[in-house]
Length: 341
Ligand code: PLP
Ligand code: COI
Figure 1: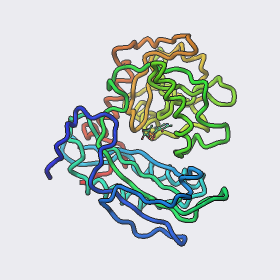
Figure 2 (figure 1 turned 135 degrees about the horizontal axis):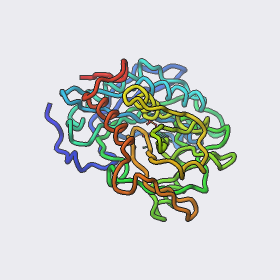
Figure 3 (figure 1 turned 120 degrees about the horizontal axis):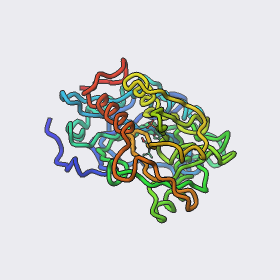
């Protein structure tokens, strides 16, 4: 299989149109059998539920070329399950797990020429999503839906790769106490756009959101969960009902305990504790683990002891082990790696 002529090592996190995407329609109360198509465009009625009331949910996962030349995905079953939870919360029909897994495999296999080579630093990002398709003018769920998966080769989510980030505490909230922060709904990301644009204008890479009710506890960023490391090498990660249950974070907790022998605490994390931590990282499919060097709270700077040039030592070990598992250099726990080819 001849690869596309792409400068893999210099890709950022952007959209590169690939050859095939998967489409399945839900009409008359049932999903059709689904098909791969070369048409990247969607024609919708002007009154489609997704356009009027933002009835859309999505997922994000990656395909990797392993050291021995296979193409694999990482825990796609958890993406399938999370998308089912997201859909149910927005009163959408669920796309069955087995069909989700099959569609992922079809899209990756059909776009093999776009799967970045081993060692290039790039990966193939898959974006499953689903939206209300028919016209809806009173506020209610749509009747008809479309499920799609496209893919695009990507490099690091944050410019500068593994260079530590500077983030700020946001005055805006991304989720409400009994809202939709725990699911992957497009509306959560629309909510975060003003905050991210103003953070960038002020020179920050991302926002740290605090719990919307008391504004005393750390939640997450716009697209990643937090992992902290204490000065005595414990991994601490916030527990909250209004953050996205990150698959990367759940995997890293297991990696920390079982591969690195570290103690892990999943608990509420007060913002006031952050100044005492030794390392901080953002974890997610896109972010992998991106180190944070500085957190700014309304002018007060909290500088992580790990500094602004390197990942902290525990963050580095977590990063190397996780990516080692994903790229086939390190034996994965049972069921984590799905071989496509
Ligand atoms: N938190 C938010 C808000 C996200 O958008 C993402 C990305 O999917 C994550 C966390 C990380 O989740 P995962 O590790 O499953 O990609
Ligand atoms: C992902 O990591 O897959 C996400 O969806 C995060 C998004 C902000 C790119």
